[in-house]
Length: 279
Image (cartoon, rainbow, N blue to C red; front, side, top):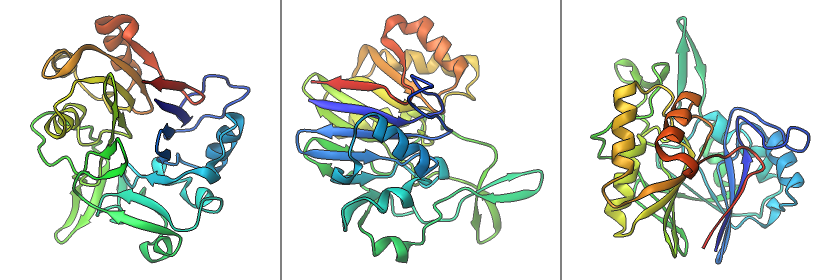
């Protein structure tokens, strides 16, 4: 049994109980331990919503960061103040690379604001570009190197390169795969590497059906033809026909409406306060 609790999202299931912010965090309960997947944009929202869900973040056994952006790592410092010393932290090797948003000629830092030397004193870093098992039955996808399909891209995201500014390649983007009895559960942060590319990575790793997709899928900027293509792929290639979709954060309202039209009751919003259980 896997239990997923959405701690941070752009929306909340109950505006009185749960706070919302642009960001994402999931608490994942597994038979082998507790995982925190991302930390949202702020410790304030993360800790408030965890308390409302009667979830003790001090008991988290593993931390996984999907990528470096502030809306997924902003609550990290507050979480580490209450977490177990030496907590294992799994992420990509480029987690600490500086990342920026450039608008109107102004560059703004949007990456992780904790230095590697500081973080290494507080957690046990496991940085890898390869798929990694973080607990029994739970794997990172590792870096999505094969990107034959669309990416979850923003025109404003850049990194510094030797020859100046370069569009962010999002090498650090990864997702989680849960090996449930009924099939694979894909848990996404932002899917900057692209949802279909991430699904293809999961299929390369496991010869099992993907029965559910949870989290942010960055479909907001897709045109109608590309979104239709995505729906076609979601119905084929070792993905369960009409998989369950529990989507939030950067998926986009239009994409959610189109997916709901295509898959009906299999599509669900996943705001802060949502609890999902998979056998």
